[in-house]
Amino acid sequence: MLEKIIAAVATWIIGMISSMGYGGVVLLMAIESACIPLPSEIIMPFAGFLVSKGEMTLFGIAMAGAIGCVVGSIPAYYAGMFGGRPLADKYGKYVLIGKKDLDMADRWFATHGEIIIFIARLLPGVRTFIAFPAGMARMNMTRFVIYTFVGSFIWCWALGYIGMKAGENWEKLSVYFHQSHYVIIAGGLAFVAWYVWHHFKAE
Image 1 (cartoon, rainbow, N blue to C red):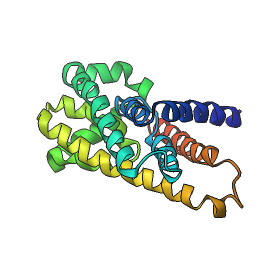
Image 2 (cartoon, rainbow, N blue to C red; image 1 turned 45 degrees about the vertical axis):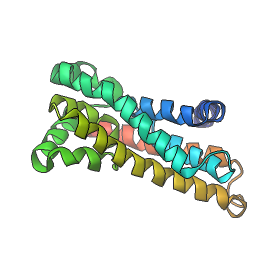
Image 3 (cartoon, rainbow, N blue to C red; image 1 turned 135 degrees about the vertical axis):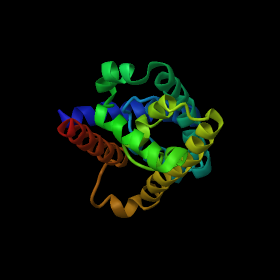
Image 4 (cartoon, rainbow, N blue to C red; image 1 turned 180 degrees about the horizontal axis):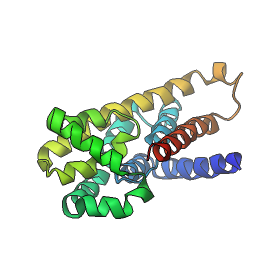
């Protein structure tokens, strides 16, 4: 069953990025930042793998990823602004946003202020839903976009770099693995499975 899931996700992500290039990275990362749990831990390393093949550049995929994060975060921001807690309480469970998540985000805003948007963009899992509480807090939109872009650029660059280095050293790694893109996807899916399990356990 897991192999079928890996193959399906791999085929879709590979197809999107391979056919659309940077546009595919923008679209996938926009989905990830719109409070939809499509992990960047899968998307960006594969884009980085394509960098090692000369099909993209590291700066280019980081820029595309950061733009996608901003595009996807804006609807989530406004959903938080106009929907607030009632919307999260009703539908949050479907995108893995729970009461504890929002309580945590509220505490972070109270303790650290708006800079928490930048910090959260560097944290797995949290980065996916942080735009929603930013909207609830009615954070200044200009600062929200800047913090989102800068934090996301660093995150996307780092994940892309990992994928690029894996691709550059694939001859050495191939002794242990046979299908590079499946290894990247499997690693990403393992993280997703852990996050979902941990999330519902904590609820």
